[in-house]
Structures are given as C-alpha cells and as structure tokens.
Image (cartoon, rainbow, N blue to C red; front, side, top):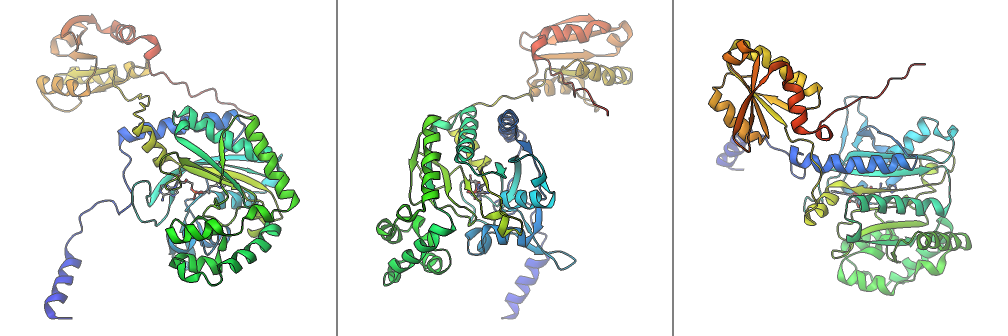
Length: 452
Ligand code: HAM
C-alpha cells in the first residue's frame, strides 16, 4: 500500500459519517403509519373474531432457535441472519421470521397444558440480510398466525381463509392467486428425495451454482429455482405427488375439498416447496397475479415435525405470515385510501401571558371533549400563528388575545369562510363540538378496569 492510500483511508476513518439509515431499512413516517395502523387494526379484528390471541416474542433469540428450525442450508440461515456475539460470548440472532420463536415460546411456557390447539398471532418487525430491492428489506414487518397442537386439514383451510379474509378487508384479495401444494411427510419424502438426486446425476453441468449446493443439501429447493436451465430440468423431474403415502394423499384431498367448500380459488403448484425447511404436507403462497413467485406477499403451511426438532414431544402445527410492506405497496398501487385520524380539528392561537395560561387549559378542555387540538405555545406573533393554523389545514381557529381574556370571550374563526365571531369562553368547547359534529369527535374510553 502506498503512503498516499494509507493517508486517504485514515482520513476516511476520521471523517464523521453522514448519519442515515443503513441500507435496506427505513423510517416509517407519519403518512406511512396510517397504512400500518389500518393493517394492524384489520388483522387484530379478524384474529380476535377467530379466537386467536396475540403473542410477542423477543426481537433476538439464541441463534440455535432459528438455525435448528428454519434449517442450516436455507438462504435465511446460511446468508440472511443478523447474528452477533453478546458480551457473554453467546451467539444471538435478530429474528428473521416468527414461527421459530412462537414454537420456542409454546414449549418454554408449557402451552401444551392449555386447551389445544393454541391459536396465536403476531404483528412484528423481522430482520433479514437480504439484497435490498423493491419488496425486499433488511427490516420488514409481518403479521402471522400459528395454530399449534392439532392436525386436521380443516385447520390448514382455516388459515388460508383467515389470510384471504384479511386481504379482502384490505381491498387487495383479488390481486393474488393462491398457490397450494403438499410436500408430504418425512416418510414419503425420503424415497422421493433419493430419486430426485438420481434424476440429476449427469445433469449437474446444467445447474446453477446454488442448485449444485441444493442438490446435496436441500434437493427439494431444486424444484423452485428461477434460473432458466434449472427450471427446464425441474419441469421433467420426478413428481412428489407420485410418492405421497396414503395418509398424506388423503390429507391433501381433504384440504383441497375444504377450500372448494369455502369457495376459495387456488392453483395446484407441484413446484411450490417454500424457503424454510420445517414444512410438512400443506404449503401455500399468495402470488401477485402478474409478477408470480417473485415477491409473494405471504405464505405458510403445516409444520408437524418442528416441535420435535426444537426438542419437545411431537406436536402438529400450521401457520402463515404476510409481509406488511408488500401489502402496502399493493394498496398504494390500487390507490386505496386508508382512514386517517390525524386531521386536527382546531388550532388555538394566543397573545400575551394571561392568554397563554387560558390557552393551556382550553387546549385540554377541548381534547377531553374529543376535539383534536393544537396550539402555538411558543412566542410567535399572531400573524405567524395564523399562518401556522393554515398549514395545519384546520377548519376552525380559536383566538385568545388580551381583550378576549379581559372580556371572558374567545374568537372563533371559520377558516374556509374566512368569517369570525365572539363566543363566551365558558361555551366555546360545546360550540366547537357542535360544529365538528358528535360523530367526528375523537373520544376514547380505556374500558373498565377489572379487579379480582
Ligand atoms: P416467508 O415466506 O419467509 O414465511 O415470509 C412471509 C412473508 O414475509 C413473505 O411472503 C414476504 O411478504 C415477507 N418478507 C419476507 N422477507 C422479506 C423481506 N426481506 N422484505 C420484505 N418482506 C419480506 C415465513 O416467514 C414463515 N414464518 C411463515 C409461516 C408462519 N409459516 C408457518 N407459519
């Protein structure tokens, strides 16, 4: 290294770095929050209706929780985990998905003692060191559901229906095609995987680099490779459906018959295997009708073997998760408006010390009545405050000056009409409530507390 380069890198090190978000993560600004709030509300409502209860697992867990469950050879574990050593030299990982943590929590908290199945849902941020691009972020939000403790194709169908209901509520269900498949159980898969590997003997040269690794470590994933040559070979590969045991076959037939009964349209897709290792039997994904597999907005399936892998007794389970940013992308593309409760009803302007005191109290009296109110409590001139009121786009501004304080009045200004009048200070809250309309008020009752 020349002296010059060394100086340059020294300088780079010393230069304060511009403070900004790392690649692939982003701020959720107030206008975006409206979408998140709306989606969370819909998910909470549908889950509550169906008897699901909310769970939050830690943002980081011991690395093993994810390694064991998702599978060492998956992209998520081999390339995408944010793993670090803590001060006690323990390997920890930011959760890349929700299922592993929920299963760990089920075991750790003895949930098998609860009435089965245990039905849980979550709405949380997750982390994957993915290559950032549209729809792929390093921190992203998912909502998901897990039904643990029972095996029945009706439960699998229920998860697909619940997912579809949520997408309907969000106004985007029609944009997706549901892809379904069964990947059998350990029993039927063992023979299939051996035959699949045999099929590829002599064809290795046509496979992409990733598929060469998959061939040894995770052969099922060969079926859904997007590379052209790999896809052509996969087309002619043995079909897992020919290897299904009687139980898996019957299970799948029942699952599909329930979907038919529920009038849910789906596409059978024998190449769908999902990117996580823990699945058995039912798998499904919601694909954009136009973009196909790329950037599925959600997916899931049955994972009857996971509990055992995690060190507990065998316990069947099924679940799904959806990417909130991808959902928002589709809602925006469809120009769907989300309700906003951020609009301010009233701006309170004041001038003079006495007026400011009155204004402080008035602001809270208005808010207690459900009137969304802001006030300029700084030192701005009346002109500057009225300009601010304009920026807030409020329908009404209240003005309190020295004269109004002395006379016990308040000026109320209708911003659209540009007209103003005096109202008695004691009557102003009710007057504004009347103008805003009872049904538009932002009242909130925390609900009655219950004591034993
Ligand atoms: P997944 O298919 O890995 O499944 O993720 C579910 C959804 O999360 C994806 O369809 C996508 O919408 C979103 N997602 C994933 N990675 C990213 C990313 N880097 N940026 C933005 N969105 C992303 C699971 O996570 C399983 N735990 C689902 C499950 C629950 N299976 C059974 N129970």
